[in-house]
Length: 80
Image (cartoon, rainbow, N blue to C red):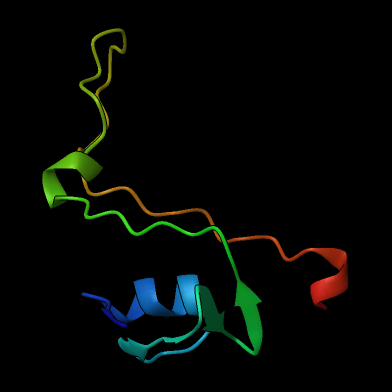
């Protein structure tokens, strides 16, 4: 399975490295990533327009409606 990020910053934020192209392997029904196996996973196709913020109907100063950035994941204690 191949994943390609549209920007270097997204790749770094979500994977911790600067590779915009990521090749994922499957082991049966488990997804292999970062030396670990993940089960019970789902792939979603998200259109770019679905990433926009909802309209600011209650704010006096509206925010720019740039694509949202995901928060940097916080590792679990046993992942360190």
